[in-house]
Structures are given as structure tokens and as C-alpha cells.
Image 1 (cartoon, rainbow, N blue to C red):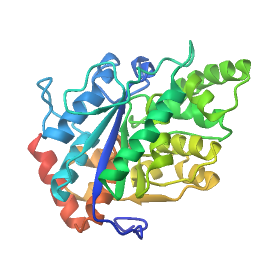
Image 2 (cartoon, helix red, strand yellow):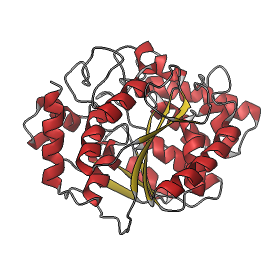
Image 3 (spheres, rainbow, N blue to C red):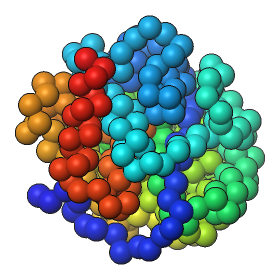
Image 4 (cartoon, one colour):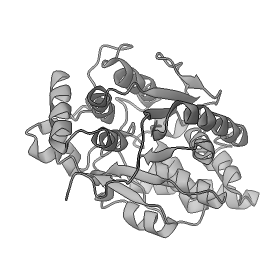
Length: 336
């Protein structure tokens, strides 16, 4: 496969990468998320990833940006692409447990709740409206927006929202072995609560079962006037499902070939069913001679912090596939 499955036909002069940061308490359920050293540690991950992408290092704790198996985090890839393309990233705090340590736009959201026990995003409508305002601000700043996210546990909220909106979704995972049974049980309880409440509108479903990133991203998509690429896998497809249910125009989604090829998920089929155009980035990490990056090829991590979109953005700004791979290899080797 080529580096990009399809080269988007877009013209731009002011590209921007923006990451939406958020938490859901689902990430603290043991076994749900591998995006952190411990279940409680996942609540720090968006803050630390934003530090890495912005500053080139994690500054809040003395730690390297690798999983326990030595797999470089997606944020380290996104950082490398920001350096290569010369783009200064922006972040939006959609609802974090810990205050961000880098400058962020703030839409004043709260941490997402566990959808088994209560409303997950009680102020989903407010966050959507603030997302619309953010889209207007970002439109003044850029004419190409690559919009990523960092929400540990977000593939499980994505499962709940996608199923509630009528899609037979199977979602990906940061684990090589997807905890499908645990996710399905959480989703079953959340869907029962939604059915019992008689909910059907997309923002009500996000209110009951989503996470704070979703309504903010949907709002940005509604109002952004330039070229927009959503950077992510099943979590961004959940955002697209909300947009479609609201009658909006669906954006293109960019993710990695590792998400596309995940046998425990059905991303290409889900995108086709929804009518979403997908672009897949294949960085061929197995050929770089780095044992940690090679773990992406066996299904570990796969995607996150808009890494696929960041690689696509670097390519669109004139950098070859070889330049991108070499920059990633050089950057992550420095963290070893």
C-alpha cells in the first residue's frame, strides 16, 4: 500500500493541527484502556500527551513517552510531525480531571461520567454550542484543520454512541488484545439505560453515553469554514455518527492502517455504512528497524492524539513518506 490510501485534493495556505483533550471515568475501569500506566493514570494521559506534542517532552513526571513494552506513544509521532511541518499545535480542554499544563482553549466541560450509572455528559448541548464557537475561531486562524483527540477509554464511549445510533459497530483498542467482552458489557448496560429513558436524539445519546470530546468536535465540524480532516479511528467515526444524525455534512476521516486492519474492529465497513470518506496512512513501521514502532504492526496502540492525521498533514505540507518515517524514527529513538 502507498503511504496514503488517497491524497486529498485540497488547497490551503494556513494549516493547523488541533487536539481535543478529555477524560471519561470509563478509562479507570481496570482492563478498559491501555493509554496509561494504571487505570487511574489514564486520567493524566491527555495532559501529558499535550505536554509532549507542545514541548517535546513530558514535564509533569519523570517518564518516557513509551508503553511498558517500549512502544512509542502516538503523541511522540504527532510531536515529530509538528516539528517536521513547522506547525504549532493548539489544544482544547473539553473536560479534564487534571488541569492542562500547556496553553489551551477551554470550553469548560467536565470529566465524562460512567454511562452505566448516570449521565455521561450532562451538558452535551452546551459543549456542542461552544464547539460551534470554537469552529468559528479556528476558521479565522486557518484554512486547513486537522482535528485530533486524546480521550483514554473513548473507544468504549464510541461503541455506546455508535450502537445507540443504530450502527453495528465493533471498535478498536489501544491494547493488542482488545477487551471486547468488557466493552460489550458496559455498552449493554448503557444501551439499556438509553432505551429505558426513551432517548433518540443524537445529543441526548451523547449526554447519556458519550464523552466530552464528542459534542465539541461535532460543533467544530458544523461551523468550520475551511478544509477539515478528523484525525482518529472509531472515536472520530462516533463523532461522524452524531453529525450525520443531526443532519450535518460529514467530514473526511484520517487514521492509520493499523486501525483499518484491526481484526477486532470494523472501521472500513462502518465508514462505508455511514458514508464517511476515509484516508488511511501506512507508515510501514515494521520496516524501520525499531522494535517499539514495530509493535504497531501487531496491533499495539494503533492510533491516538491524531497521529494518523498528523502524518497526513506533514505529507500535505510537502514532506515525502521517507522524510516522515525518518523523522519519526529519529524522534522516538531519542526517547529510548
